[in-house]
Structures are given as structure tokens and as C-alpha cells.
Image (cartoon, rainbow, N blue to C red; front, top):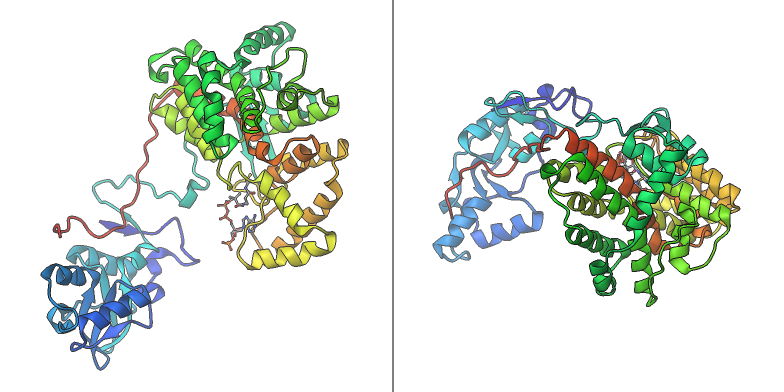
Length: 520
Ligand SMILES: CC(C)(COP(=O)(O)OP(=O)(O)OC[C@H]1O[C@@H](n2cnc3c(N)ncnc32)[C@H](O)[C@@H]1OP(=O)(O)O)[C@@H](O)C(=O)NCCC(=O)NCCS
């Protein structure tokens, strides 16, 4: 094994320059040779440590670890009469506080130890574990020196080439193919953007008509699925959960084949079917959960208006329908976000389109990804009044809470989706808009004070909740509505992945006990 730095530096210091005293634990839990094991075991559990250093005055004479206690437990002896001396490792190897981390790791690894007492001038000053050393060093097997250490969360790591779109975090800009996504949301329909993502260019009049004729019939829920939808709706704890099962069934009943075994035309057909039926499934699931019959889609309505129609069977104001559609357009695609990456990973195994979309739905359902908009609105409710905004937020941040609807992995400036949706909310006269703008300003100020240098601003979820709330969508439909159009982005990525595929299969660094250990 070799030890090298993680990137250039760790905690402001090059990993190679770390010494043991930087990472060791002190003070140390100690015991005497004559202490009985029952007492020492209890003290180890109480302190939450897996080793105790046995000392004579301050001089380490042994080390007793969890492994020794396991050996002892296997012996069947009485812990109240057995003493540490008989079970410890005597004269343990020690390390000095100014030894290099790399050297200390090497010695631990070579000898199969997990802990070193740290000793200065013959006296115990700390203990260092394999885990402590690994926290500042990247371990690479010499047999595979080509391995690359990725940062936690894969931040900033490029894992594929794509022509679907991209996010420029520093500029606050993102695009679908070659067009600004916000410009598309402002000026074209969702179906046009969908065509763009699937075909690579915006449609002309004929192409648009042909595309709409192609997708309309695909919006109907297949009969075998509609038969079991009430049972799925009853047994799911959320619409996202039900949607996952329903999409899985659509894949199965449409006989979707492994992407590896079919050509682009067939993969595209599978992708179109899923993208078209997802909004219908969402609204059917919503109504069934409320004890109502699903409503079939209408051909004479725009994308957003039809979505609202399937929710409650009423005609909504044209501007309200368009506002929902614009929200759906802003969320179609957004770089290698967690759900898109998930969908591509699944597709890279050659699995069918349905399987890849089901994975995407699972990833999107998490609160750190698509599960935030209802929580952002809950935040507005919890704050209640403008005067309460600052004290509430200061308290929350000081308690280590994340403010929902703020912060982004890629944007270090205003999220263009949030700016756009703030404009949409103003245009439609959303009730909560003035209060939301006050809260946004306060959150940005509070985070700048309490989390300086993190560049935290409102993300797409903050104003999404305000817009959807005004348009009559209840909170349990917020994340599903995100999914209703993100599915198009997933599918564009799935088609791209399948067209030029290599299985996505990274590595992990093993940090457990050195193998092989003897079986207990
Ligand atoms: C979106 C998000 C998951 C990005 O995560 P990330 O890139 O891994 O960033 P981190 O969670 O590591 O945050 C970096 C720092 O900013 C802080 N931070 C990030 N978002 C924050 C938020 N919304 N409120 C308070 N602090 C926040 C973190 O506490 C962390 O501080 P630290 O350096 O003291 O540990 C994160 O900002 C978040 O959880 N936001 C709230 C949930 C949300 O709105 N999700 C929807 C995303 S579209």
C-alpha cells in the first residue's frame, strides 16, 4: 500500500505533512493490569471506544481491544474475576506524536493492528487508530496506482460526456441542449422542450403535430395497470411511493426489454410511453388516495392545464395552467443530479427503460433532492410573520438545521430556476409571494452571517412551492409534479447512455479491520 494526500490538502494542510498528534485522540481511556475485565469493559462501552491502554504510572504496558474482549467472551471465563493482565497484548508497539501519518499507517497495516498508543518521553499522550489515520490520507494499492480518489459526494467529478444539457453554477445558468432552459420555459411549450431533448432540435410545425399525435395516446394508463392501481394507491404511504410501483408495472406490462438487447427506435418508444403516462399515473394515484375515480387526459388542453384537469376535473385559468407547465419545464433536466445519475447507472447495466426510471423516482423522492418544495412551504408556515423570520432562522441554523429550499451543490449564486419562478409567482399574483420574498432575503442574510463563504441562495424548490400552492396543487403533489417532467430528462439521459454505453462501476476504499481476520 502507499499513502498519498487527498487532493492537494486536507483541512488546510497537505496530507503528507500531517503528523500523528494532528489526528490522535487524547486524553486516553486507561486501565491498570489488575483491573477486572467486567469494569474495564463497562468503561470502554461508556466512553464509546474500542480499545483501552494499560498503564503502569504513565507508561503504557499493554493494550486491550474489543478483539481481546471477543476472545475472552469465547473462553467462557468469569469477567468479574478475570484481570486485564491475562488478556491484554503486552508491550504494544507505540508511535511518537511527531511521526508522519503515512509512516504510522504503514506500520499499523503491516502488523495488522488497529490502534497505537502515542508516547512521548516514555509517557502516554494519546491513542491513534487506523480510522484516524485514514481520515487524512488516501490509501491506494500499489498494484493499481491508476486509481483516482473522488471527493465525498463526487462533487465536481465529471463522469460522462453529454449533449443533453449542462449547469454552469458560477454563472447561474443552465441549458437543455443548446438553449437556455429559462428562455425555453418562457417562450415554448413543454412538448417542444420534450421534443428538443429527445431529438436534439426544436420541432417545426409538422414535426410538432406529428410528435403530439404520437404521445397523446400514450398518456392512457394501460388496462392491466389501471386494474391494480387502487390497491397500489391504498398500500402506498405517498404518491411517489405509489408512482414507483405503477411505473414498474407499466414497464412489465408493456414488455419492456433490456436496453442492451433493443435498438434506439425501441428504446425511444419505451421512453416516450413512460414519459407520457407518468403525469396521468400521478393524478390517478392522487385521486384514488382521496377515494375518487381517475380522470382521463384531454386533447384540447395544454400540458399544464391538462395536468390540473386530471387533478380535479375543472378548467383552470389559462395563466395558472401555463404557470404549472413553466414549473414543469424548468425541472426537466439539470445536469448529473442524483436521480439522473441513478437512472444512467441503472441503464448502464443494460436494464430496461422502466427499471432506470423507477430508480430515478426513488432517488428524487429524498428530501435533499426532490422532496424539498413542500418542506419549503412548511417553513413559510412555521415562520408565520415577517417579524419572526430572523429569530426563527437564526435559531434553526444555530441548531444545525438545513433551511429547505436553500443551497445547491452546483449553484454558488442565484439559481436561475428560483429567479424565474419568483417572476412566475409575481405574474400570477401568488398569495404568499411578498412574504416569501421577505423570507428569502432574510435566509440569505442569516446564512451569509452564520455560514460565511458557503454561498447559499434560494434553489428551485423555494418558489416552486409558492407557485404550485397558488395553482391549487396540494403539498403531497409537489414532489410528484417535479417527477412528472424530470422523467423526460431521465429518459433523454437513458437514451444517450444506451447509445454509447459502458457499465458505470466505480470502486470504494475499504476502511474496516485489516482482512483476513481469523473466524471467531
Ligand atoms: C442542496 C444541498 C443538499 C447541497 O448539499 P451539498 O452540496 O452537499 O452541501 P452541504 O450540505 O455540504 O453544505 C455545505 C455547507 O453549507 C451549509 N448548508 C447548505 N445548505 C444549507 C441550508 N439549506 N441551510 C443551512 N445550511 C446549509 C451546510 O450546513 C454546510 O455547512 P458546514 O460547512 O458548516 O458543514 C444542501 O444545500 C441542502 O441540504 N439544502 C436543503 C435541501 C434542499 O433545498 N434541497 C433541494 C435541492 S434542489
